[in-house]
Length: 486
Ligand code: C2O
Ligand code: CU
Image (cartoon, rainbow, N blue to C red):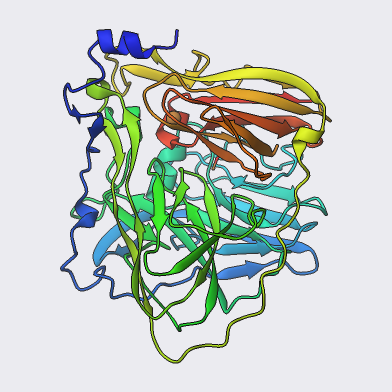
């Protein structure tokens, strides 16, 4: 049974008890990353480094991906992190619609892994994006992802997806950007900003998750941009840059702002579907991406996250405040640059509301009373519709070819980001209000005690995949379910 707010209150789980004060608790990690760093590195001194780029050639992107532990330096500190090919983040992959991506993944970790191309609408069959694959330590697996010719351009990313090890592996450093090109916006330069967080011990080990943290999902005490702590960016006034920002944090919400600069949103997740409009801030739930235009004005600015209260479980597991802080600094100096040409029209996306609805279903995020005290278990078990993930069970059977309307409800006292693999969603209602903009999303935040309505395009890609909470500690604890499309 899902637990209601009333039951929670009766159990003394909510309200001003324990670590939750006035509904806003501090995460267990506190906010040390806010304090101005006094160490030489990490105090905003390092210039932002872009991950190495690999591009498709003649319609194919071929990558050898080695997941391996490496020693590196983060915020001036020695760090033994998890890497793809030795770097955090991994290389940025750039492909075109219609391309094939071939990945040979070698697992040199000590836990099983696999690969998910988050944001690609590709078949889960034929060694495609299959979250059920498990690659043991020492094993190699050959992936193949075929992008349809009409695959939408946008900001995607790749990361491991082996149920039970996802949060640890992302928290440790395994992620990379995957850009599907094909929409040109004249800009002075383009940047990829992969935002993640991590906690390190004094001797550079990754801090393992503590059992109570699973309830809210862990947040690291260092927030990184491209694996760097508070890097510095520089530009000239008048330049226009395109920023592809990925929230690769396992649980942290980002409310991005760049005070003093002119920021326009082109799209969320798949990108450039919105008429570019000036924004003051952009909310990225874990897993979301933003496609942004920044028109540079002279002066210095900070790329900040403003802080987001994602609810809490009271005594059952603390509160979930994704704290405010500075992600990077931006210095805009020098002679005024010539402005790039005008921004072309947005990409039109077919409105799924014009299609007939082939099926309706309701899906609920649930935190059920669990095995109260077992080792490594929380007191509440995260799941969907009262059940934890079971790879041998099919939770939703859908006929290929149609559009379905899914109502996703969240009776729990905390936000959960809903992520569906493979099949694109159009958000049509949130907070009881219709959404007018026509966009494709693959992560939709469902606020605490709230609900959203999405239309899902099942036009193609038969096969089996999953939906899950993108607070990855929740996913690993069972907040995932399977969909069979056929
Ligand atoms: Cu980014 Cu199923 O995950
Ligand atoms: Cu969740």
